[in-house]
Image (cartoon, rainbow, N blue to C red; front, side, top):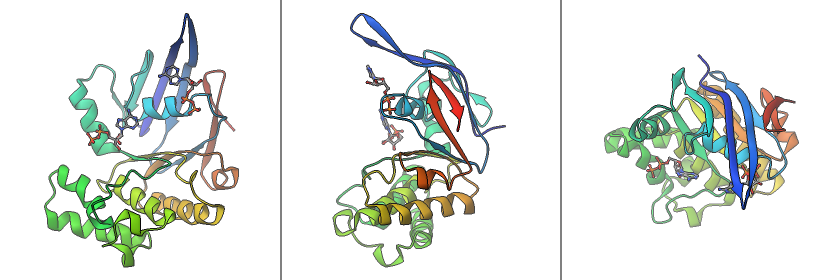
Length: 224
Ligand code: ADP
Ligand code: ADP
């Protein structure tokens, strides 16, 4: 099955008396190992789509399947478990814990999931090394550059080996050269681990390097 399948998803927001229809029966499937860029102007519903696909928000109608499993009828606790085990999130701002080192930031989600400190440390070290941060393991976020911070955030997002990585403008806060490096690191990691990825971006050059590009038009997801 697809890692992610949105079927006839609808979502509207109340704006005073009026209803603002953002998604009007959107269909969107992402297959294992596939990377998809989501390119759309602000206000068209990118964040709404990512939040619904990431099980952070429920659609008004329609269904979200994760690895073939329908999520709408689930208990919140089951949905949270799926989100924590199958989906990794990266945002425009890294949200790393400032008092912890890079290594500890990547160890934490694994320890919350029940891995031993030793197991978590081994995987965190490998991931950070893979992302070019072998010399930065014991630095705190404030001691890292913007690009390094974002690479740590990517390592943290995939620490528990999710099947799907969702990224909302992951390079939006970086200068073009750094954005390029971080994006390369992300796509390499995605390919190497056969991870599916949905990345919202305004950067067409970076989007061109992904498998597929989609946009949101009239409340639907359409291929570009
Ligand atoms: P994008 O990420 O593409 O900028 P969003 O999904 O954040 O778009 O928002 C789409 C539209 O829905 C915007 O016009 C936004 O103002 C509106 N919107 C988003 N969230 C809410 C909310 N909680 N209540 C009311 N309107 C909202
Ligand atoms: P936690 O492990 O802190 O309880 P959750 O399971 O609530 O985290 O959320 C998983 C991921 O989703 C985290 O990366 C968190 O930052 C993010 N997240 C949670 N709620 C929201 C939200 N309303 N909007 C955006 N991201 C969110």
